[in-house]
Length: 377
Ligand SMILES: Cc1ncc(COP(=O)(O)O)c(C=O)c1O
Image (spheres, rainbow, N blue to C red):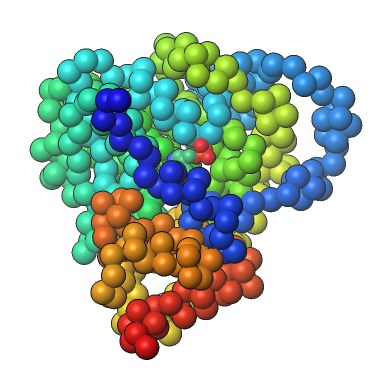
């Protein structure tokens, strides 16, 4: 077998997420039920029941592509490809853009999918950091140095997973100028747009700022509908076509029902209600987490995340982050993500966009274990 880089975080989730009592490893808000979704607008129920469970348009049903396009300035439905989650959009984008000898530049920390895919393709990967001391703002000088004539792709996650950092307009412009200097594509994973904590303004997309952008979105995070397995990408039509050619090899399409339910969720009537729900969860959950962190003395610290339902929390305990995560699973039935999965030990990623009693129940279990680690019996 050739060396293969598994997707550490997703492997970890697959192994344990269905076993634990409290799952604080997810990065989206608490999922909606089908009833909650359809109760916002009941006018589509009959149409759903009459739906033939056939293959849909493999690039996404027209009404859905139109609704997605409407979220991006200057985009039309010809710019949209509907995929099985953002994960497929990212994967097939990387495969479509990169040729032999091309290099990739990646923001770190990051959801490590693109890093792993590029590694498995044998690509040279250069990175630039988000800097904790600067409230997770990116080091743009390092970006500038990382981008060379061989750079074909700059991969970003904005708002960022795991830090929740949102790039400023100035930083976005700098990144665009840097990419255009060498003609590189920007792959902007924007799955947390809409899940902002401190502003009601949706995080702006990279789409429309430069002609070589692939912007990726999803129903999984900001909409609390991961079970639909609907994602998408927005890009120039020629690039959409190239990625679509790979989509046919990998998944053909997401399901007919997912297309229809996603179109309902992104309708003018329903979309704002879902986004408000998401922000309510985030804005109620983070103060609870913060208060709990403060109650633990100096053990935890962290920069308040600007978006997403996750906090990247630093801890001062004499234990490696994977060991801590495993002890939480085995001894307390609680799952968090170890910083090791982002190459940053002594951090954990904790989700908080969850019902209050669930979140508090999980945090009190974590507290029991950390007290035991801090002062073993
Ligand atoms: C930044 C980021 N991109 C993509 C994904 C995959 O999302 P989806 O469920 O839409 O495939 C995730 C899931 O955690 C994520 O955090």
